Amino acid sequence: MNRINLYIKRVFDVTASLVLLVILSPVFLFLLILIWLTLGKPVIFAQKRLGYNGKEFNLFKFRTMTTEQDEQGNLLPDGERMTKLGRFLRKTSLDEIPEFFNVILGDMSAIGPRPLLVEYRDLYTSEQWRRHDMRPGMAGPVIADGRNLLTWEEKFTLDIWYVDNWSLLLDMRILFKTIISVLNARGINQPGQATVDYFKGTKED
Image (cartoon, rainbow, N blue to C red; front, top):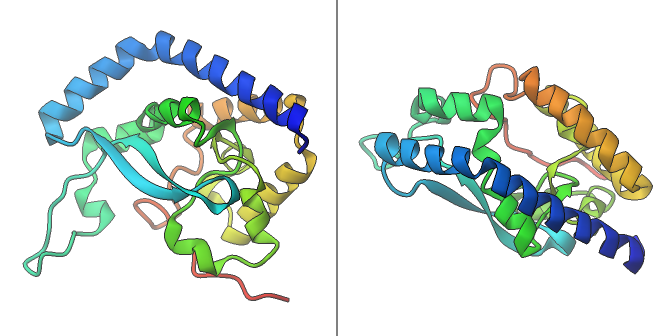
């Protein structure tokens, strides 16, 4: 993507995020208080993710799980720590409202490949790594076209296609499809999982 397109995309990201944060500020404050009353601190969960060119950043989300541990001090499985409020927040994607701050800070874009765990850094093929040629997005081709109903390989294929075919019109199409996907609560979790199975790598051809 050339500099002009990057600039246009960045202006759109910041403008849209500021407007939406203002509109959603009552919801943001309400959830902030509700999560604090039900789960305590911290209310906002920060997790290291890989961003543009593989640079690490802290992804912000509303907290959806407890910190319950077993007798050995290990965290219990996600399904056991997920609260009813947490399931609702994930189903509606309201847990991702704090990511608007990531967009404003320049860590993320409104639309792009979803940012993944830093633990995956050495598991990508050279082709899959190209998903980091753009800023990661709050919404993206994977969320729009199946989310966690897709295999990891299908997700990466969509991400690379997006990087190679980006346009503002494509972003508008993905945004519209993402809204429909969220309203339908489609593919929130991987079948049989409370969240999603870990990526274990793909062999190079």
